Image 1 (spheres, rainbow, N blue to C red):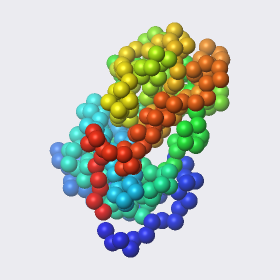
Image 2: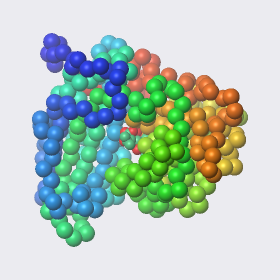
Image 3: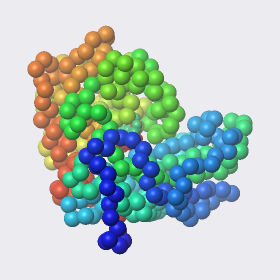
Image 4: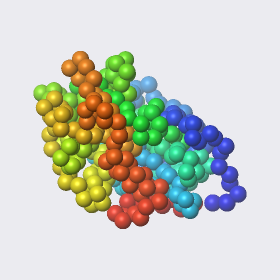
Length: 348
Ligand code: PLP
Ligand code: COI
């Protein structure tokens, strides 16, 4: 890449989590049993047939990743093969063709490289959000899988997902709407899960919360996840727990944080059912984690018609979440040693 190519002059520190049109996106079409090589395009508009199964029957899935600039200028992806694996699990579940890992990684790398001026600089607090997506296109009226698919990757520079800056606590409101059934599609990153959750998020926001918190849909007792993030909980006994559930998205951020907690912070960790009402008093800190959310401490949770403060009255610091956040972000930005081999450099 020509070193004279300049970064865009954006107010990086002021970016929120919004779509920002960048110069290039990757597109590959699957038809007659095979994938094209794919190409970079300038046009952000996708012409889609009005009969496309992605529009009618939600035959589509997507991923969320980030690229960060390190202090030495390297551009770093975080565990991108896990996103490829998860996208293929969703593709199989919805009877869509898998995207070969080689194509997925090449598409992400090419899109990031082509949009180099839009990758936020080191220290700006912003990052480049990467949205791979797979959609059923082409004409199809009856309920059956599409005959054609489009795999697309676009990127957008973004700031924090929740309005609160940095590690300021957010709030969650338990939803009376179910996100996913135990044997449904909750563990897949498919758009249909999110359409059904929009009302829950709006209702949570009407209560003054940032996001909805879902309990298990069978009994309404156990914590599942938030609308846009998984949950981790530091207990007063010093351990870190996270919900075991078949209905939640297997978050890559959560897997990484649990690993950091066990390996670097030497905490006891467990993935197990967590009963909200019975166990709330034993919570010292609660965090919402994900690619967009990173790790946001949760200060209070709305359930049974009132707010409940995490950690009890007077608790307004989250030292464990802070340590986990610092370690995760430190690895992702290349400030800390990549001892687990999680980084993937995009050559420029
Ligand atoms: N849960 C939901 C519903 C999400 O949308 C996300 C975001 O991707 C996550 C959890 C976190 O997953 P990850 O850490 O892989 O981004
Ligand atoms: C992500 O964190 O990447 C997501 O896909 C969450 C989404 C609701 C923005």
